[in-house]
Length: 349
Figure (cartoon, rainbow, N blue to C red):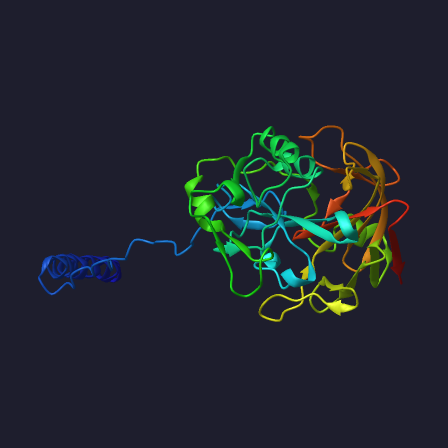
């Protein structure tokens, strides 16, 4: 009997298992089993990154500008600096200005616009013998009122496209009522450039640092607050460093040099070249196919340098005492062509 009981319990357990398994299988196959959940549909990922606009370096300032904005010629003009011609129109929008001695101890400018072409500029005056040497490296366009035929012929020989007031039939010139003749000839500058938009832009003339602080004078120069230059007994100029404006503010003959709107003219770089001046038939000529001493001022500091120009079409080269090419600060530049002997340049710490 004992053996029969022990055998019966496993059999009963097996029987129960046989009953439970079919029930479980039936439950698994019934419709009460939850349907699998669907996977949420996700939106495709898109980037909101916007590529920066293309840029390029403006050839006459070293500034970063919108790509394609420099694809037009430069415009050089001979600008009057007689006291009766001031304030000049759009001189504050220039990329480069050269101040030179002319007859009578006064000065005139060769001003060059490229990165910002104004609607009008002036007053425009006559060409002088050194102007072809100054203007030729820029290519492009030139405007002046006339001049001795030998000087006009020399300017034409450079291949520039000229607008000459004395011979003009294009309607590009007019006379302003703001000043009296002959100090009132105004050029329609943007119209002149638009008519010649296919002319190539100028080559880069000088080396530029990426920032003001990285310019050669700012890095290696001596702190100088005022640059005084004298072209003759009757023509004194000064440039005063203004840290807030990050520029040199200009004065003429002891008074601030102003725009028609009353703002003081300023420059990022002031370059003083000591030059020889010869005289032919009472007309001074700054000799630029030459070399000499220079000083370069950027960022409130001034660096001694040497300048040289080996051909009419060559830019002026600026090198330091080690023979290294000087890097100007990005921005506009004024060149002061100060005569040896009769002129002077004084630096005030």
